[in-house]
Image (cartoon, rainbow, N blue to C red; front, side, top):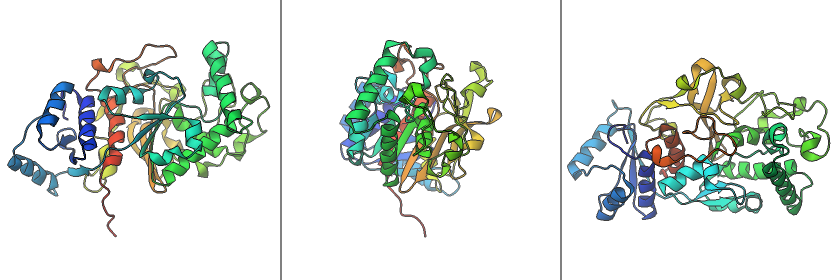
Length: 394
């Protein structure tokens, strides 16, 4: 999985997942040649690699043992993690949405990793218990319809989405969309606390935390929910309920395309040509989880925009790990944390290979980006729940 040896990094994850589906175990060789996968040698696995255009090398038993011995050496920042079971994947996404509206569904489809879609009704009916991994679509959990009001309030798609969201909230027994979305966010929080893995991108990251922090507080203006917001609602925000963020200031103006001070989009002064973020390096033997999540063939990854592009470094809780950041701009791009028995990862931006994706833009053709470092980070998260859990040292 290094830069020189692999011609299709993204489909390599698909072959690994396919191998796990066959009840075979895989070793993920952390920090060895870009985070390579050691698969059993079988004719059907070789053939699958060839069909999918994935580069592979056949090793003798003695060579494989030699590599594993090197990795186990205390002098090497490497580790071999056993992947045991193909995780069952759910993507939280509205009905009727096209797969290319979301980077995660695009890369899962491209890598040929199966997933199922769920939405509010299934979440509220505890369907999340069936899944190991949940991706949050770039959703707005605050009930403000993505803050698209100023630019798109007369657009057919905006009007229809608002109608559809209101009808669904009513059907599920809620008088407001914001109340229904909060109930969904709380169910997702329960899922994580109980041991689930949640991966969110773009506006699903900050709007999720904002919704949890504003429980019992009306932060929506009349054009969103038909009545005024609570006076002085900023002082009623409870940061203890959030996963990742603290001390943020909400954007009160409904005409501003922004939720809060968490997002750095409007404060960035970086030209596209120099917009990169750096992945942190961790101890593979002592910190295998962040090491897994940052496996790549480069430590420098191209930046990309979104409704929520990146996170203000000083508004991230102290117990949350910043795994990718742009230090010169004081922003975090890729963060990870633990909540209860489960895990969450937030990844800022919309599409790693579409710098400024806008409403109505054509989909990204991943055939043009088979070695994308930005998309690899998503797939690291997909495979993470497959890792065998080690007993904690006491």
